[in-house]
Length: 495
Ligand SMILES: NC(=O)C1=CN([C@@H]2O[C@H](COP(=O)(O)OP(=O)(O)OC[C@H]3O[C@@H](n4cnc5c(N)ncnc54)[C@H](O)[C@@H]3O)[C@@H](O)[C@H]2O)[C@H](O)CC1
Ligand SMILES: [K+]
Image (cartoon, rainbow, N blue to C red; front, top):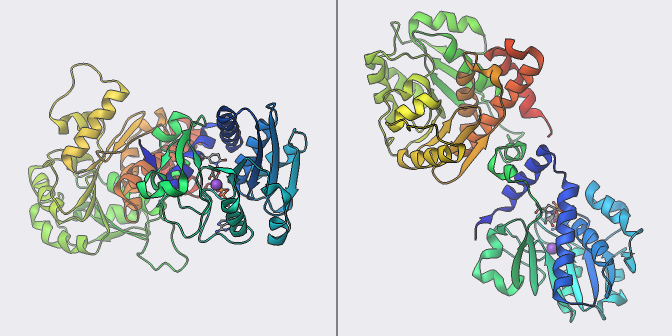
């Protein structure tokens, strides 16, 4: 069975909210599912819910409310702390609803002594553990730690919500946790729960569907942005990316767009290696750009490679392609440059005669549009493939080429050969020239501090969402430079 990490699960939850399915709805489905499972196990029982103050406890509040409606169940609930300390709005809403439900007894415990003296431990047939879930950090503290001891000491059948409290469902590591007879986890199996060594703590593990929208997982969303590397407060110049853009010659706007987009996406330093004929033009676009001298002439050519080699050695990521043109000497130089790169975003004309599979030792992101992609694959399908067929083509191409591929389109397809995502941000106004260069810049900036797949998929989302903001202001009159201006607003938004 396919497993999911808790951090990916959190991203999917946020993507759900972005699509319009609120955390409250997910919690309702989770709690209702727990109640349904319990009532399918037995017709009558005294059930004690032990709830923490996070959303794991919130699931317990919902489950208690649902179970209390079913004849034959006596339902009690212990809250570990006072109601005023409940941490999330969703959990609080569901706690407040308990007073209007048929739950027989709701007790807020003051301290661990209060917890130990609670009489309901003795006659519970089932204890439902909603103490800690995926939000736990470090060792369980008090009163959670005592609650775990008391659950383990009781004679009842123990059902853990999402994971046994104290157990790290991502890694399976544990210092102290509930020993469950049954674990009811949500949406998908979690990696740590699936380990054979975990069985003694988790008991049987069942996965409950909670109605997560398919697209929250298949499409990139703001939850994926949350998992991007966060810059530390003590970061130095260069820690957040030193990017080299190799481009220009016949065109000067394209490399400048890529470079400015990389800066707006958070790169610390962006250097442009462009032919001398356009270096003055590019430097004139913005004082934020560093233009390397030393490339004489009006086209990239093999004589430039020794100089570029030095620039590459002091860069984290190379973006190669925007505005280069397809002169024979330029294509020859590209072929010599690619094996020198540790991390490269390969775009536009650099995709034209790409040697595949790409050289070992580097990590590559390719950003073709449809025409470039099918040219790279060496054949164009007779009929227009469906989205799912394209997905498979992109996946297998990425696997064979040793690269992450971004197939740009109204729905972008991103794959590393294993995982594949779609992106639907963006709009028809973005058919204007330069937006592809902007995408290469954003992806390059993210690639400095993130995996190729995360950089490519989040880069598509950011570029498209910035384009959507620009479209809101300018409609079909939007320009690539408007997209660049909006990148920071997308990246700093709290979704
Ligand atoms: N898609 C889903 O799977 C859904 C899961 N749901 C449930 O939500 C929890 C995760 O909720 P969260 O609020 O993030 O975390 P917890 O409930 O685990 O509580 C953490 C809570 O406790 C505090 N805390 C953290 N570490 C410790 C510690 N070592 N000792 C004591 N206290 C600790 C922390 O401050 C937090 O406030 C998930 O497991 C599911 O059960 C959603 O309800 C529906 C969607
Ligand atoms: K739990």
